[in-house]
Image: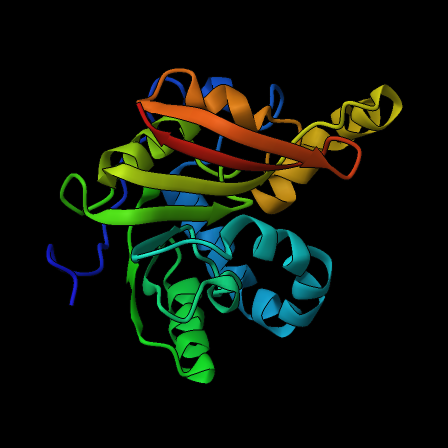
Length: 230
């Protein structure tokens, strides 16, 4: 059982940096907006999880296969990452969406894995400092209203000798493809709450994490990141 209690049902207003992290022309989404959006999408995500695994499974395995100890999966969604965590990992998942949390709990049961999943805001994690040996997250910083705050929270709850492992996506370094992403950025954000032209490594600059390794693939659109507390 979680040492600090379970689900939350409150959402905080956006921080002053929210607007800067959203697309220029779209209304920035609050945590409440995102919770409602992903509640609506949870069933679809669960139904198409096989396709998600087909595309991103090798990348998730590469990013998370050596996670160890007590592992926090931030913005765990339907629990897609769980199958790629070692059998010895003690899994704790959090997500903003109640429907995603329910799907993630069902995935733990289906995999016959122990663990717990809570409804929680990644920007205000309800865990004490230094609670986890490893913090993981996949394709999530693009959705947080304040990604720097969320990454800062990952740093806070990670033990000093632990690791933060992320699988993220962003703007392609192939300019023609990057411009296509720019063109569709507002519509994509409005439909999915996703800033797909973000720069994932930039979120670490104002946190207590040091990026010790990263690797890009898919024309620079996908980045696997390993960071450690500074």
